[in-house]
Image 1 (tube, one colour):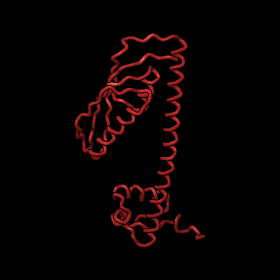
Image 2 (tube, helix red, strand yellow):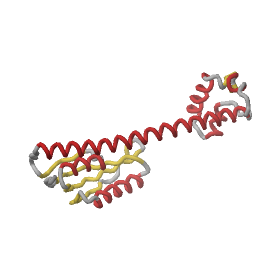
Image 3 (cartoon, one colour):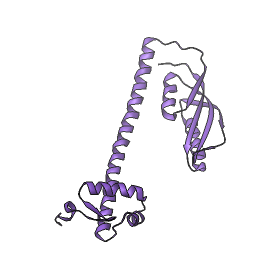
Length: 196
């Protein structure tokens, strides 16, 4: 499929911290675009970083040419610009076969992105479950060793006391802990388990 080149302007934005990280990330993005064989970067302008609610935002304005509509869609999916403005051509004309191939290429790209997102979601869920079990085990072992108030448990774990209270509340609901006069003790369910 032969596609006509498309010239457009795009805004790339990165938000994060520290300031130096977002500055290096935008340069890294531009470096990838320059190395991309389906793009030709004509101009770039990085605006000074701006602070927004303790995070830093940096914007790059670029003008670029891509090989065709498929490359344009791939660019948008890969680099997630906040906006684009097509300069040339002023209009597009597609034959049925060309448009069908374009849609199928776009769907293949979206399916790849969806698979990556699902894989990351599954990995994140497993990590979260494992982290929760580790925190619960830390709390139970600490309480067995006599560290039995939320504030001390917070300091020993490095987790904010409000978050520790949530974990302790769940362990109380599950019957693994009891709370008596601001102190936690091993509950009936946890204390009756046989040691292996």
